[in-house]
Length: 235
View (cartoon, rainbow, N blue to C red):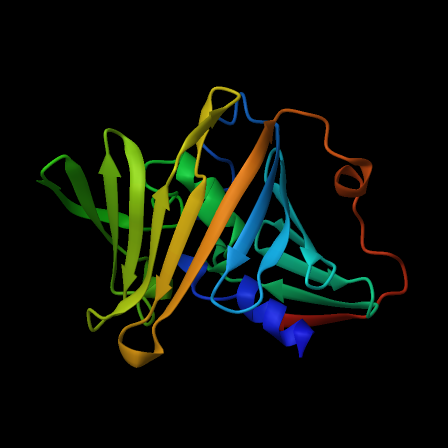
């Protein structure tokens, strides 16, 4: 079912990316629009990601099914215009809201882990790569054992989450950085989820980064139409 498949794509194991209420460099970043293509080996998902300060994130999926997603605080709203249906996911922790955070988290060297309640355990160098190891907040310790961040010359390279037994939960790798509006953004994000035969790989490509440009009216004034039934779920 297309609805469930797209929900899985948006709510998959990119939980690790970054729990930022406001990206670093926010003094200059007021709006952002960037096109994306996501591919996990199945049907490609295409659309546009919008950011509006201080913390509003919208995602418009244009293919394969028209869909709007709105991230704000601890809430994720997903709306399917063709089906006249909507879902509201309420998270106990910003870190659990995926996709958009994995992109905006690139703007912070620690991916916003400190603000999400993670504490730095130690750091070490591996050649040019600086590795930092983070312990999760108490509320996430049943799921996450540690977070490992790799940076090169101050720029994020990867974020990895392991479970309490040391097994890989998810690893997000950033590459093809580009400059727009004086800020650095990822052009490519690869996410690997899990270990063993069930491991899943997903690639997202980002293009046409527009910084501090006026957002299109459909994004700037997006609201869920009156009368649309909303199913609320805890996440």
